[in-house]
Amino acid sequence: MVRDDNLIQVKSYAFAVRVVRLYQYLSTEKKEYTLSRQLLRSGTSIGANVEEGIGGQSRADFFSKLAIAYKESRETAYWLRLLKDTDYLSESEFNSIYPEALELCRLLGAVQKTAKGTGKKELRL
Image 1 (tube, one colour):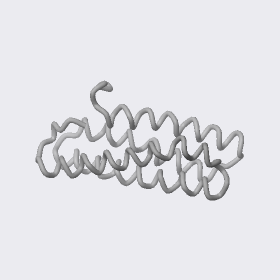
Image 2: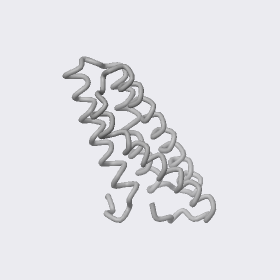
Image 3: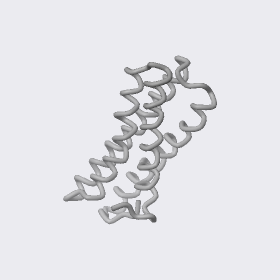
Image 4: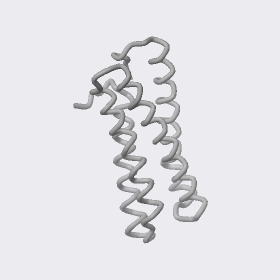
């Protein structure tokens, strides 16, 4: 269940929807399958790991899933840059989604630091 006040949960889900739509565009219109699959995998994994972290059975599980979500957000940013630099994404297409990937990186990084500092699993994401 998505809580409206859980910023990372909401943003990571909305980002996953955008990544799925971008994958559909890249595979249908650009006939690009390899890089776009990598983007699809990492971009949708961010939210999935956030969800797993929220439902984690322990603090260690929570921290582990957030760390994975952070790494997946960085990987997603990489694939977006590569798609732009190989001309599969135009500058405007790239600029419409890349800032969201960076925002998720920043948010997840900040939550990790805060969570480790507080030692609380029930941290408001």
